[in-house]
Amino acid sequence: MPVLDILILLAAAFGAGVLNTIAGGGTFLTFPALVLTGVPPVAANATSAVAVFPGYLGGALGFRAELAAFDRARLIRLTLITLAGGIVGSGLLLVSSNEAFSLVVPFLLLAATLAFLFGDRIRIWAAARARSLTPEGAAGLFAVSIYGGYFNGGLGIVLLALFALWGMVDLHRMNGLKTGLSFALSAISVAVFAVAGLVVWPQAVMMMVAATLGGYLGAPIARALPREAVRWLIALIGFGMSAIFLARLMG
Image (cartoon, rainbow, N blue to C red; front, top):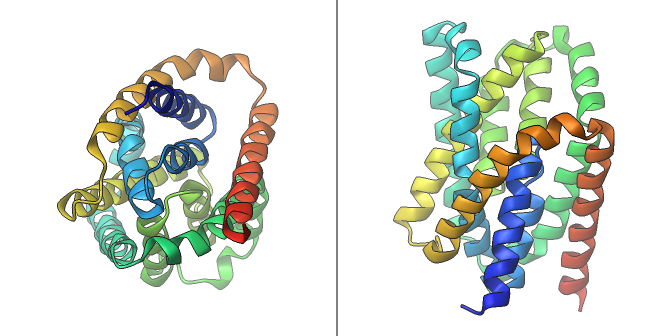
């Protein structure tokens, strides 16, 4: 592997670890970096999921008190629905050709960017309509989990909006549940991708290490930077990557 490619992947993964610690959006760096260095789009998506997986584990451990506050039977039920959707979503990726996946990538990145940028508004909109919906509908979580298994970008924002639709209002509990379910979804997706031989392991391993280091060092950065400025920076990265992939598609 060329030295320049290694540097690009390490820098992207480190940056993703920092971004995920601050506000999320690490996929906007890891996935494009893998494609840029020659990994086919479908394999790049699977490898990106592996690269950021340690961050989900760390987040789940960090929110274990919030997760412990949920009724065990309720949490198991939600986790099983998430796992089922994740298997379907990652299975859909397995049967997608690189050409077909390349067609939807710019729009998935754009949708994830918009969800990230307007996440608070989406959550507030969802909360205002909570009473008209059945709490904890399996269909909604299953659909979101399919999306997460297929393409992970923006998953956290979509989950928070779904929880708001369920009528949840405690943001700490919502974040705890989001992190726990994201970890379960990421774990099953990584397992499916690994068994299917879709992961490019040399890149995945080095990016996991860099992302973990970035996540660790991202904590003091998160405290130092204004959240709104970081949010717009990540959105600009997302819009930029959407435009680049759209240009590649049209060119």
